[in-house]
Amino acid sequence: MCWNRRGLKVLKEQLLEIIRNGESSGLEFKRDDIRPEQLARELVAFSNFKGGIVILGIGDNGEILGIKRTNIEEWVMNIATTLVNPSIVPFYEELLVEGKRVAVIKVDMGAAKPYALKEGERLSFFIRVGTTNRLVDRDQLRRLFQSSSGIHYEITPVGRADFNELDFMRIRYYFYKIRGFTDIPTNDDKEEWIRLLVNNEYMTKIEDGNNVSTIVGNLLFARQPKRFLPQAGIYCAAFKGREKDYDTRERTVLDVPAVGHFSEENGRLVFGGLIEEALLFAQRHLSSEELDGARRVRVWEIPPEVLREAICNAIAHRDYTIATEIEFYIFEDRVEIISPGILPNTVNIERMKAGCRVARNPILMQSLRDYGYVEHMGMGVRNKIILGMLEFNGSEPGLIEDETCFKVVLWKKRRTI
Image (cartoon, rainbow, N blue to C red; front, side, top):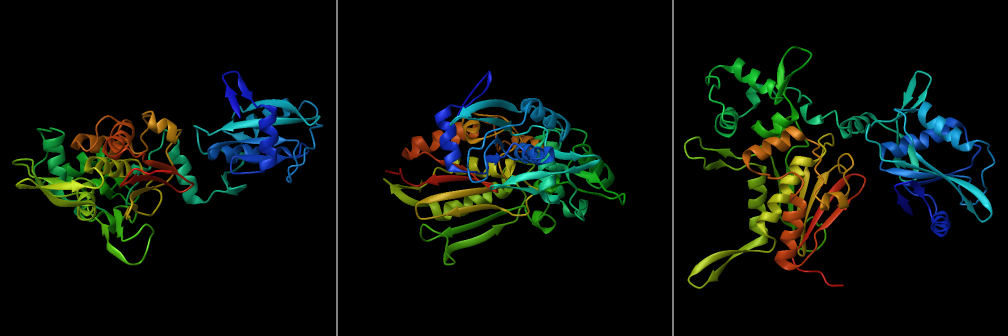
């Protein structure tokens, strides 16, 4: 298909091929005698997913039936503005295919999610799953709200994770040494420390009046982040071959704060955070010491700076509404780092490669930047992961997205076709 600035432009030959290939997660066929709410449901589901195309005048089996309804464009636009909430304006075009006219309606991925079918006072939320539209459940609805630019799930309270569950020395170091606060509370002034954390959205007050950690506060400062937040941490496994197997070289779950604990006296690392611990796991299975003349040097199969960037990205940009850990797998020929959730907002693989700057978890992202774990937002994939691997062994990293996760694949050797 070809899209241009003037609207939807579908070449006739391409449209015939599309129809022959049948329906997909991004394509739906409909007769033109459907009820308005049926079309609205399709528009809602595509808007809540990644966009898609509805072709009116086609049977479910791909038979070209044509459109007979009069004023069909006005009918479509009226549905899009009155039965879809918030309203949308799809691209619309009519084409002649094998002597019959069909209507092609293209819906972009919505920027104001979640979208709903409006029937009187009732709102029904749908999302595209394969070739079907499904009512969203509570967790999916929460993720749709998060994917809009105005709501960030990272400030959701973590029940029972009160101030006593946090590592006070990490908190003190962050505000005193990293942020440069010169008027921090005294060590024993618990209420003032809580006030400082609440004002910076690392803690929040819940309905019973108590203050608990937010997700971002838990990730950064909790002694054991996974105790009350199962999706925190990284699941690591080193396999002997090229496929997953029960027989591993090592299997572990990392349950430490995202950032390291540093000494106030000299700034040296005292205890590693998730990033340091993941790199230690990688060091055990992706590097070895070799002699270089009279001295020993560590030789890596994957550059540690590439691994570090991929791990940082997974921690900073993953979807924390999904209750599974980040996965870090080492195989005989590759490394896979799997981040739960699809890419945020309007980001896709090509925009990511071009340096698109969108943060799903902006407070967490800024905190990691404060510590120096990340630098210029949006350029890590392009400048550190892709260029880093090309310079190291000439291999192009795999950047793969499906309906549940985003995966980075780093190859130990350049792949040949």
